Length: 220
Image 1: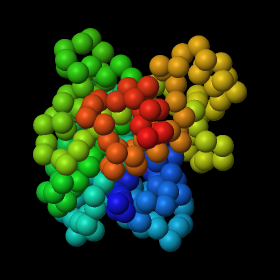
Image 2: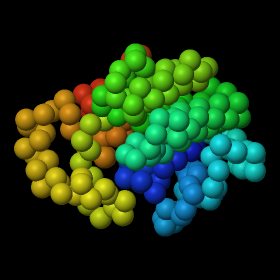
Image 3: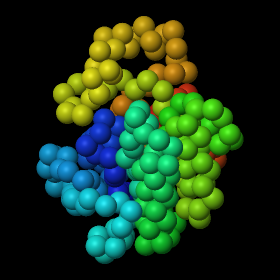
Image 4: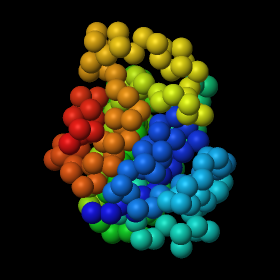
């Protein structure tokens, strides 16, 4: 099965890693990146569309057809944001994008990066976890061919990538120790990318994937 993939968030650490794994993978035929600013990567498989308002996709809808996978890696930090603003940039934006690509590509596989600690009950005290939980829950109610919610913890970045968060860079040296002490909390950026690709063709019945699930799917 050849994959035609939409990737969002390619100017962030996870999105860049997923995009680059797609470009390297023989089963991925083409990659469309939707970003507010350029990812700075050129490749025969890659097409990039710069688009500012992800809550209004009408101008680019014609470019969003003919895909069988969407890897949604776009996200914002909750630091400094009130819940209504964070909800708009997380829940509203994600659901609008998901509903649009589903309408244009019935049967598409959709993967969403939330994070370890996401609150599926939507009732907890941690604001970001509640909002992410609602986002996951409502994505899973949509009629995708398959949908997977990725909940990575610490992600080991790849050397030489441009968008590695500084905090992650600080801990890069300690990954072997973290992996040994906290195997259920750490994975690599490569594993996240491979797991997303494998989810399209070899996805498990489980739809919320914690770290150990992500690592297993990366090897499948």
